[in-house]
Length: 440
Ligand code: GDP
Image (cartoon, rainbow, N blue to C red):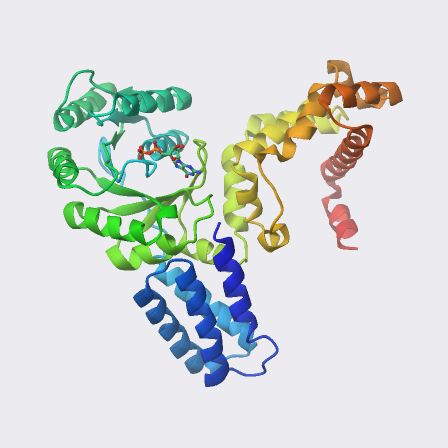
């Protein structure tokens, strides 16, 4: 996420490192680079200019009052300004209605249907919500199908009306259906076009009028940069929407849309999409995003993502197994599956401070676990639960079966043993001991 921008800002802010003091000259030099980084990230020219002007004012103003090093001070000011630019505080979704109606708008391909599913899944996992998904794209039967597939995948009911060509009527009927069936959130997925056109705008405006949603969300593909901002403006003029959803932030988007959209339409970014999987949704926190852009990672989101995905019951079972020395390769495999559910690996690594930089140019993807999985799948159930039986001939067989080498099998066994030892230590109240060991 935003690799290029992060790297350029890092370089720009480096200019001040080693300088004992902030001066007009070194600030100007730094900010020239910051502005260039923003423009390269496809941030609107005016926004980039006013951003650097504000940073300059603050830097020269605060300079005398602080004990921070110039480099640190500049990072702090840039971080605060970036946070402000992206919206200040995180904005929630209004779920006060019964049912609460959420209307999705946006161009075709922006990720509306995928996000509708993600949001339904996210709310369903909150336990108190029973969402209903509504297919209002009457022009593309494939789109209705797609929503049904998504609904099935996440276990959420999908409302559609075959043959009905009137999306306004479908939306109204769906709300009535939700009331009757105890669904307290209705998520209406609408038709998009490839570009903004009048008919689409009129149609969504009519749906909006008919169902008076608590929340109208505008979904936009962050890869489209400045276009994203222009489309947002067009939709906002007609719908006066409540919030923006930025999708595809997992791709090599330059970040301009994320940084500019709030100040153009003055509506908060509420969620981001970071992958095609249903779990790849995050609440948008401007300050955490600023941290990520500045390469400071986002450990809070990482922990939250883990908490959402990890099953407490499973964790308890695992603890018991570790205590009894019964942790085996099936459990290891299970752990890998859980980590994979948390989302794209590269994206996760980006949440660890400094990791993005360290991983630059490295090919980290979901296939990272493939070799390990293949090795484990090539073991017999007995070998998986009792790895001590793995002698040389068994290892040879496993390497052959998994298309790997004996070295790779040995490497995995070594990692597995280390992991088991560490887990055992954590269990025995030795967490502190381990920390001491690691700090050595
Ligand atoms: P719609 O036409 O607006 O309903 O868009 P879709 O939901 O059909 O999404 C279009 C394409 O973008 C599909 O291939 C999705 O899998 C993909 N997509 C949606 N959201 C994301 C995201 O956050 N990350 C990535 N990488 N792909 C996404």
